[in-house]
Amino acid sequence: MELRSIIESLLFSYSSPLSVEEIRKILHAVGTESEELALKTFQNVKGEQIEQELRFLQEEYEQLNRSWRLACVAESWQFVSLPEYAPWIRFLTGEKPRPPRLTPPALETLAIVAYRQPMTRSEMEDIRGVSVDGVIGTLLERKLVCQLGKADLPGRPTLYGTTPEFLQYFGLSSLDELPNASELRRYAINPLQTVGKEVEKQTEEGSRPEEVEAAAGQRELPLTEDANLENLNNTHE
Image (cartoon, rainbow, N blue to C red; front, top):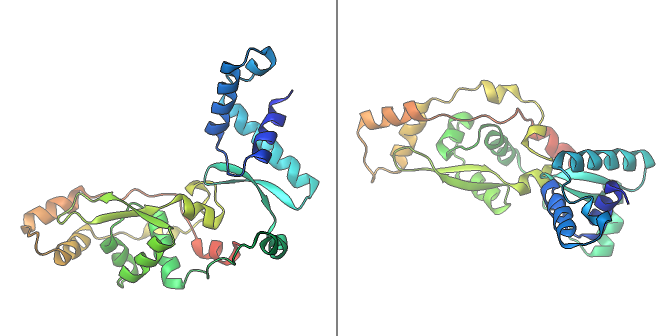
């Protein structure tokens, strides 16, 4: 019995994607509970070895040129059919067509969030130059972004970031696979300007100018890998 075959059987039998850690826990649990030496052999398999076997299976299926592939989406592995077979599969399963593609304003805002998350609305508006209230509502409804908490700024504005559904929508394993979009990395957000916008939106909180300046000096925006979601939006199906 080979580890590769065990992993293949798990992915084939389970209806939901499985992560490397989930596969490792299954192997460990079966080995712990069983008295059979053959099963205990896989009890302490490392995640790196599981990942290696998954990559091998992925390459093997691609070489077979079948109608399906093994894909890693949102850091979990599953069998997926190729896009060209979607019409017949949709008819068989009764699945409704995918929602309309994102509008350019929604896509632009989503790209900004993906590159610079976590971000407040005012920081997004500082880059786009227009209000994002309606767009954020759409992205929240589509579950492509979510609220990540509150920023340490006057008025405690909400921070936004991408979701696992975002990775699934674009067929990405992780944010590290986002393609290049250097312009968004080069764009410098004016912290005093964005903090000022948050204060204007929440004037009932009241803050002295020196408090605003101090908060702005503490605010840092971590960057993810560069991205170009427009290209992804044009090609994903």
